[in-house]
Image (cartoon, rainbow, N blue to C red):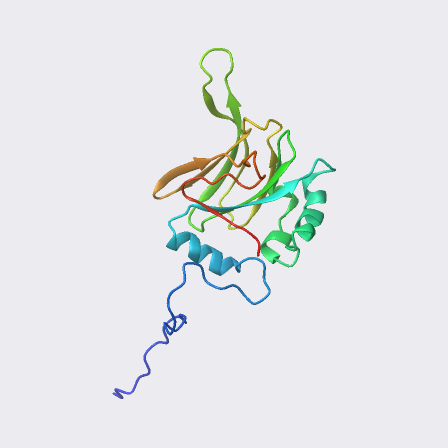
Length: 187
């Protein structure tokens, strides 16, 4: 009969004491936001995935090369990158290495991206290379051509499908931006 029942504690939210900033500050000294901050940013910016260009690697298998690539960028301490399983390393011909991180409500499927060169240069998804609803980062090595990407990433969810092909700009070897893709740039 007591009316002094404590109200349920609401989820902790940052105090609105300062001007809101477009991107939340990560843990001090962290080159990238935490998984939770990154997922929040993807929802807030209406992006369906985050993408990071790690560099070029032709050596060994991608799962073997990944730790060194992460260390070169100072990202080996980021658990959601360091913990990428071999089953989440997708290899196509090429040496450009990307990390794709789907938004939490998205299923990521990777396809061989086929460019028909005989008649009208149609591009279409070919064989399925990877598909998972697991909430995890995926490493992709691809793009033997500087001009034509050979992987199509499709992100599907309740709000439909979005797709893009990870590739870099020729001028400065950075990730080519695409609508709905949040580019991760290590500090």
